[in-house]
Length: 267
Image (cartoon, rainbow, N blue to C red; front, side):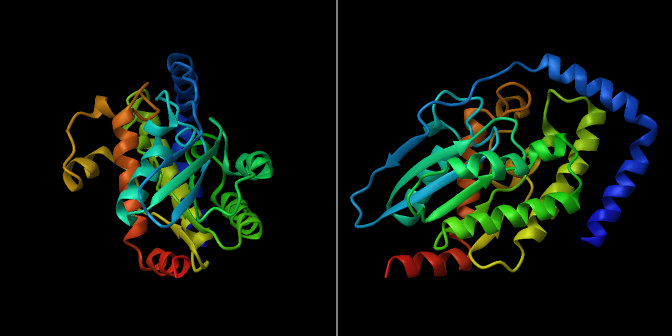
């Protein structure tokens, strides 16, 4: 954490001279971006003729709440479930507990007590962007993430927990270049703090590759049209949810930790 804290302090020292401009620009962006609703149908099933059914609990902020699409089946949760089903050749049921605007602290305090899913096999969390916008210090986020992991493992001791990678804030069209630069650096601090909080914890996995449109274009061979990836300049489009959900689960199901877990629950 020492290096993370030093990076945090240096970032703020560098941005002190332009902080009034960052503040004014953030207010302007808030007024400009439309207020999109969350997706409908927060529970669903991808049904195959398989002996087992994997239960997936999806937890987090606006990306997991499906802001930008009409149904969760077309959002991040639905595409996570579809790819889990395809990669593992099994039926997958999913349920979403997510709220637009929530930080890690709010997920812990407000969403966790409301969750009632019975013994999920896998828990996928998409969090971090709102902590970047709120400028949560990395040491505080580290403690909050550790508390969240501990609470999840206490509530669901046999579940495999996955933290999704950080969203492409550097590519958000609705942000000014100055905000993209600052928040792009800040989201890296957020991701690294979550990574450290998950490190060496059994059955807990963090996807460290931060999302960027350039990476997707070159690595996944998707269309090179940045405007196609956002519904309102900040939140994902249906295309982004499809690509992102598949990329997350390809990483998860390709990991030895999850393969060992999946083998154990199916024997």
